[in-house]
Every structure is written in structure tokens, then in C-alpha cells.
Length: 82
Image (cartoon, rainbow, N blue to C red; front, side, top):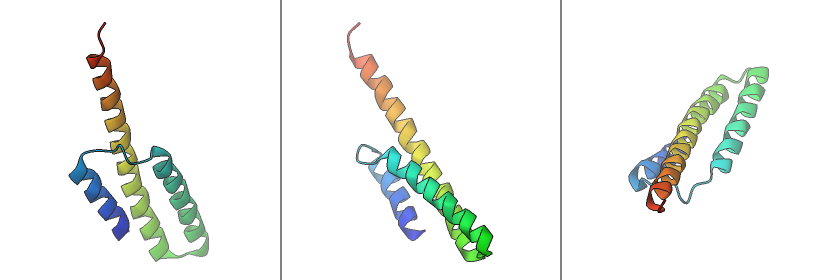
């Protein structure tokens, strides 16, 4: 979880998502969802909490990446002559 907070801080500090992969974030969300399922089945509360926090942070990261990619796309459309 601490690694995800560092990741979020770097996203905010750099204000750029060019080096980040949306596919990585989506796959990590699915991975965390599977960990939550396993944790619920095995009744492991600390793992449920950790995976839930990780999913929420990864969802925020994915949203930020998508928002920046859409913004970058529209910025390139404005630059091109009509």
C-alpha cells in the first residue's frame, strides 16, 4: 500500500502520465479484486483492507491516466490546422 501512495505522489508531482501504462493499472485492479475474493473466502480481514485500499488507489490512478490521455488527445486536435 505504501508503494501505491508513492506512485500517487509521483503522479501528482510530475503532472505527466506519459510513462505510465493504463493496461498495467487495469491488470493490477483485476489482481487486487481477485485478492479480495480470496481474502473473503479465507476470512482474512487485513488482506481485505489492504486489497480494498489498493483497488481504490489504482482506480484513482487509472482515472487520472485516462483524464490526461483524453486531455492530451484534444490538445493535439486543436494544434492541427483545419
